Image (cartoon, rainbow, N blue to C red):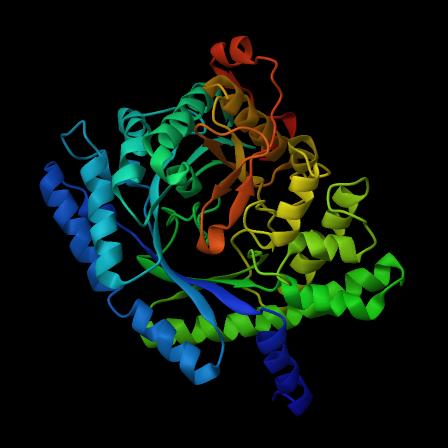
Length: 452
């Protein structure tokens, strides 16, 4: 039983500290939709998504009203589309993205993820076709999100895929230049992608998952920030314990919503992803948490250590609260989506190099970063390679979601709107990595991948 004090604490977290359920995401397997006819496959995809997720939004809204817990997004993730479309005799995969988009609109969800390919060790013809179609697919759809996994600790890094993704990010920015490169906000390049991630743009329904599943993503940077204000000047072990206890309470709320949604939708409960996912709102920032630990500005010396403490304590608190913690669970550092990160980037204290160092200890990677529009594709590919190497060697998920801002340079601003926020264009190194990227091939897996 919850005590009266615990109930009042939860109410205060929701009303005053920006606590919310960031997303209820339904994962749907589309393997049964494979068909030699692309037209038939697209029809099957649309029908199955609509059938499975018909009541997703309605159920989320009912839980929100009954429990008084804000549920910001309702989303869908599907089987990586390269695996489904590969059975069809077609060279044009854009219709598959359009079928996903129509289904998302029919169901009323905010985003649908899974226009994806897994190419960490090599690429099939279907993978190549899907990657080639990404710029057009993201330009002509509204809610479709795309991801490509180019490396893993077990396989190494597919540098041919890295080169292709550098070009793809550049083309996507150009194809959506009229919207400040918005297509790139829906495209993420992974190393060690997980199969049960409920957050966009990287969500897809892994082939090891059930026919359908309910995953919930919880967020609470404001709650953690508020908790740390009560331990000003205290030692770091006290800080860690405070974060851990706060994460425990947040995760319990997420598990409650996840199980309720699972029961009402008659769909198995998968995981709760306890990730501190910030928003542009003041008071809902991961950067401000780090500054509350004693840093003058996020990005200065000590930032990586503070983030490491935060990420670890969040995971420990979540695991104590639920045996079904999964996804990415930790702390996100998306620049455009975090009011404190935006301010630190504009001041020049938070740089790309410091962000890269921070990705060694956070839950994802270089996320929602605007870069100059004239950045070469090879430089983007090299950024992806660096981030994939961090993930591969450290056996963790890393990712890159950068937005080349066409016609803009350092000091300009990219407006994404809503939860995607505002991104100050950040400088990248001018020195070329073209010869490095041109080598191609595969960077071998590290020795510690041989764990059998």
